[in-house]
Every structure is written in structure tokens, then in C-alpha cells.
Length: 336
Image 1 (tube, rainbow, N blue to C red):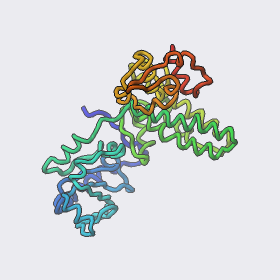
Image 2: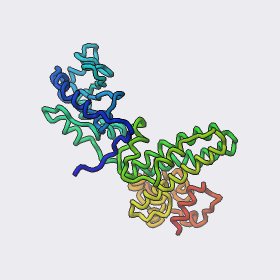
Image 3: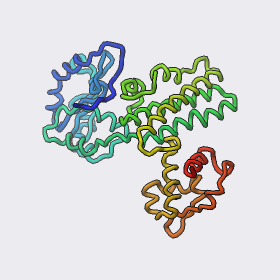
Image 4: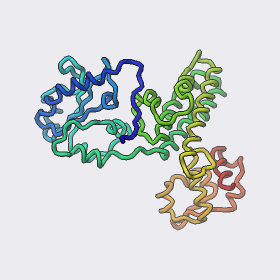
């Protein structure tokens, strides 16, 4: 049985079958073009939806010589948005050997996870998808996204509330929404969609906070733009963030006593307290050496002779006045 994937949720007639019928009637003209070694269906239609505003998104994979020909003004068909037999198409081209060797971005991973291979006589596309389509980053990715959201709604918005600039505060809250919704995809072990589809596809995820759609609408509403609505929005975002953070921790067997965004700091400090001395190479592989220049590690760890060493006295003496609150929460959790 195929795993459930997020699909468009649109209160409008789905014309996908008509578009697929059109594609079936025209695909041969693309597959038979010189230098075409593969064709995929992409875009909204590959995700299960189409309407009168939709294009049929195709990617044509070309030999190296063919790619040079097509990109030098001698393409046998128009590239980009074009009309084919009264239907809008969006034709993209890829050089097949580059496609087989390149690293795929997060957005490409998401988009290509839905792609349908229509034409692949040599099996090169199937092999490339097997080689390059990675599993979703999942809970690991949620850590950074939840921090990004928190930084916007908790830390930065507080500055603009204190300074009395409601419009700037609303703008900062706007920038908390993207990582908030992306973190929901991450805890569902899903690829992160392009922003064009982010909110819409979130409605069909397997797990969502209770009343997700209504609460998200409130989180995105600026109301009359007043400081009062800043506080209202901020409260809604904070509650949704709490729900997603709690779900992330519940999905893990770590028994994490801090927020999910603090996981790496907690793990690293716990490891150092337990081991007392860790080879720098092992530390760098597990956590990254840059972490040692940040609190609380800068206050309680030293690096000598390629070894990271805990200063247990410094850790015991550390107070809430010595480091930022976020870092001290990690210290207290490790002590406990």
C-alpha cells in the first residue's frame, strides 16, 4: 500500500482527469523529439489537482549535445509557458548527465518526490531518482525550524512590542509563519513544500494541531494592525508552536527535558558531562566544533591537545546571570 502523501485541498472542481487525458493525447510528440531521453510529469497535476488555471508541467531530459542545441535558440518546441493544442503547458528541460550527478535542493527533493516518470527507455531517470531522492529529514529538521519560528515570534517580536512599532511587529510575526508550517511537515516526516503549496498541503498532513486551519488563519491575521492584534497573533502562534514542539518530543524516545529546538545543545552538554573528555574530532562529527564557541560551552569547556574537556567547577558555578536564559535552561536540565 502506498504511503499517504499530502494532497491539495481545494474547494473547487478538480479537472485533473481532463488534463491527464490531454497529456496522454500529446505526450508522444514530446517523447519523440530529437535528443529527449526521458520525460516526467511534475507540478500540481502530479500531486493530484488541476483546474482551468493549471499548466501541465513537463520536464524533458536531454542528451548533453541536445541540451546545448536547445539552449542556443534552436529548440524544436517552445520552452517555458506555452500553449499546446489549446492547453497551457510549462516545459522545462534538464541535461540528463547533470541531473544524474547534481545534488538536489530541499525544494527539488519535495517536487521530485511527486514526479511521475512518463518516458524512460534506458532507465536513467529511475536510477537517478533511486540515487538522489533522499528520505525526508524529519524530526532533525524540525529542530532548526522551531528555533527559527521561536526567534521571530518570541524574541524579535518582543523587541518591537517594547519599542511600540506594531507594524514592524506584525511583519516579524509574518516571518514566523513559514518555519511554523514547515516544522509541521518535518514532524510528519514529510518533505518541505515550495511556499506556493505550503499552507494548502498542510491541511492534509496525517497529524495537525487541533483546529489547525482556524488557528492558523488567526495566526496569519493582522486584524486592524494594532498592538492589540500583535499580542493576539503572538499568542496563537505560541500555542501552535507549543503543540508542534510537544508532538516532536512525543515522537522521540529521548525523554527530552527541554524544548525540541534545544535538543542538540542538551545532547552535547549531557555527553560532555558524562564523558568529561571527548576527542575534538568526535565532537566535531557529532555536534560541530562551532558549538564550542557558543554558550554554555564557551563558559564550561576548553579545547586543548585536540580534546574537549569539561570544567566541572565552572559548570557548577554557572548562574542565570552568566548566560542567556535559553542556554541556562539547558544547563539546568543537564544538572537535573
